[in-house]
Image 1 (spheres, rainbow, N blue to C red):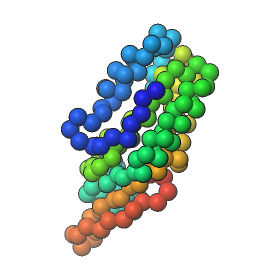
Image 2 (image 1 turned 180 degrees about the vertical axis):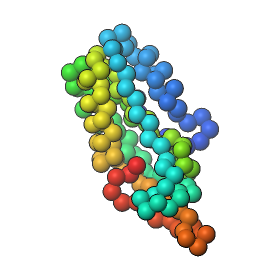
Image 3 (image 1 turned 45 degrees about the horizontal axis):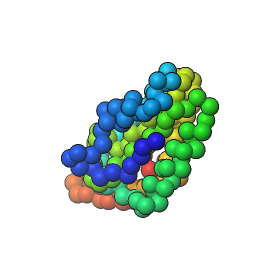
Image 4 (image 1 turned 45 degrees about the vertical axis):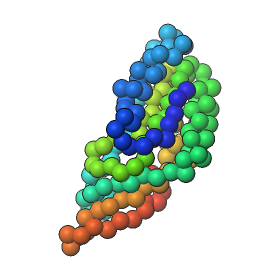
Length: 151
């Protein structure tokens, strides 16, 4: 299991890094499937306003602890070999990657259901906070913290 709360910067983790790490695990020879999820920044907020940028912050120590617990818990499932969640922090623009989740398992059916659960759980359980900066109707910018689901 590998997970990180990482900074959005040059050298930050990429999806290809996550996949490569999964394939280097000693038990990967048992894998029949790897499913991956990439969360990206939307271009519009819930009201249809253009998102100029997004700032992601976290209570990092607690976030890493919760991510670890989610991954360990899901890895106990029958047929699941590896679960990874990598969430980036910092400033982002539309289309940029925010989070990578991967699940390796013996069969695709197990992998798909665990991937969905991993995504839902990190969104609900991990102390990650999102501030949106949107263009207002007067050409200015307004910023607000987004409550509820974080991505």
